[in-house]
Length: 167
Image (cartoon, rainbow, N blue to C red; front, side, top):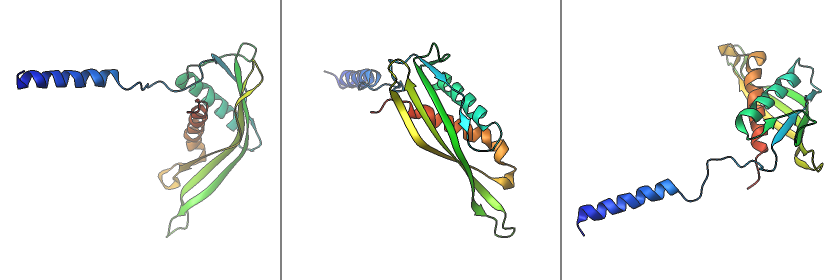
């Protein structure tokens, strides 16, 4: 066999192997036996306005965007997600040396939530204390209200990630 022919065969086999892969999938590992999810309005023990509405709305959007599940009413759903915001804490992470004002503030959301299969009553996921932290920087004009959307959305994204099957 000529060297160019051998090279062509090796390149062709390499290309074929790269296209077939090793059985890996880019599909996220969600349960296949669940088709629909109902998201109940979250409750809140914290006194900040509309956090429970923002979280519920962000979670509904994330379930629609990032999972194979459809949102449905509780009567028509296979499963339901419910929960409660237990606390929202803010802490200064660093101060300015000259003014002693906060340079960065961390906001920690602490909640309890569960995902229940309505067909058999079993909990698919249950988190009695789910903690998520996000930060904002006051010197560049950020405050809690402007970064709340980003924090709630990243919290909803983490919740959807927790809905994936265990390996």
